[in-house]
Length: 338
Ligand SMILES: [Fe+2]
Image 1 (cartoon, helix red, strand yellow):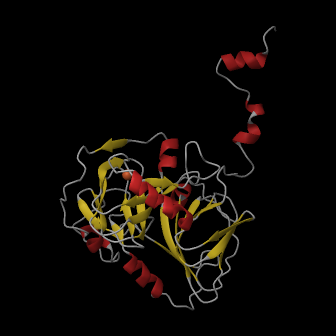
Image 2: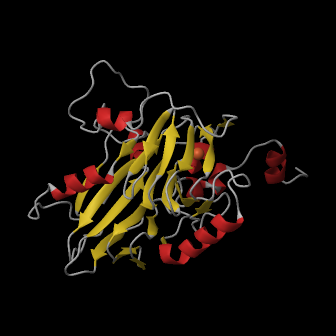
């Protein structure tokens, strides 16, 4: 045999499995994402800077992506999910588009902006969770004073890996409003009382906005003596009222209250998670890396990384909003934890 058989099979589009075994079937997952914290107080001045020098006619959306140092090309925040911080100024409109990736906004600061989702105006207030499920038209407008900023969460890293990404412009900047403002929230937010003449329009929650006023009430309704989770504290899941399950098929959204002095037990699971600090300060140790966090910071816990949260304050609660790909892991039979 004159030609190297390995070279010969390569030319034939084949490869020796025995040389790849360790990489293709690792003993356990090792994420390319690294533990990281994005500090709001450091990023905020740049948000304001770009809002002055870049119009929304030049940028489809004015967003700083929170790029994991281990996932720069294509940029992502954890393996399957993305986070970014978006800013919109009074009088501006971010034009209508839709994509097969699902999105949500968690409002950080400002008043007077709204998004229109499939013809419904949905108003934004700090702490609100607004959904834009996949392939829903959405445009954002601001009628208030001062800048409005929010955290964008999307599943595009997963959608693009699955080669299922589609995108379309509506062609006009703003959608027509075809249903009463905030109607989906008014109709469905009570959860246990469902409008029976309606039926699910897809695998996502019908609620346009989970207002902070309701989230706060739910957290306050739970007694200080409640045991909660030893890992996540008093943790609540935002649910789809039709199913009781996650708000969207690819992302599970939660809010948790870490009582003063909370020291969480270490935990690891196959889901990748992004946390956003609503209130308070503390630290999360992820695979030995200490992430210090304060109000409005965002940090990530890659899949199968061990983590433990600490609320450093002896007198104040810490409140964390989080989202993860846990529904995907569970649907595919890949969810594991220890
Ligand atoms: Fe979008």
